[in-house]
Length: 223
Ligand code: F6R
Image (cartoon, helix red, strand yellow):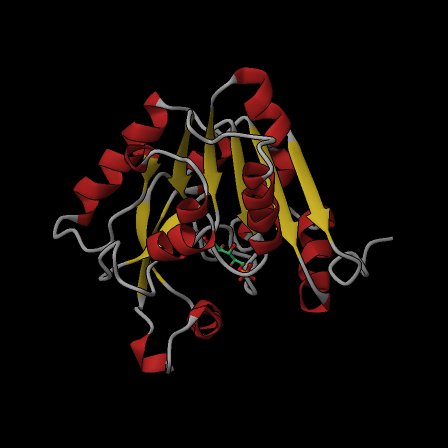
């Protein structure tokens, strides 16, 4: 990512929240602090958000990205783009975000895999060519949200808004990351299993430029 930014001087980057990319974000902050890279000319696009939370809500994905990366680097505030889950007309919000991305194609998209195989908040059953949309979160996703600072499960929003799989697949380069033994079987299915909307992350097999980054635990089921 740093090489790309240095080479081109600018980049449109899609960022995932969650625990997996935190080490990468720490590395980007350190690289910035050491003067090795500048984010002044990048545009950032968050992947997804909870419906019902304002971007400034402490548990929103927008706040998480600010806390974990954006507030520590020199990105311009106006270059940070998020899905606003608090909008009254979410269809309109999805259309706004979809055309923003269409006009600013994403160069590098960071992705993680959810415990039900989701990418962004595209839950099992999501169309493989879908655009930005609102989703009902599956139980695994609601439970996993407890890791993101919610005090109890009742506080976790039941809906999310997400870039669609079709939106994600238009990015020029995907970087899929997974960490820990608990992801091992999912990673094996994502790489060697059938490409199906029942297991949305399997769609990365159809992308021409995808880098999968795993720690030993997440890679332990690969032959
Ligand atoms: C978050 C996102 C999700 C996460 C996935 C893995 O923006 O898009 O798909 O990447 O749920 O989350 P962690 O990394 O917390 O295991």
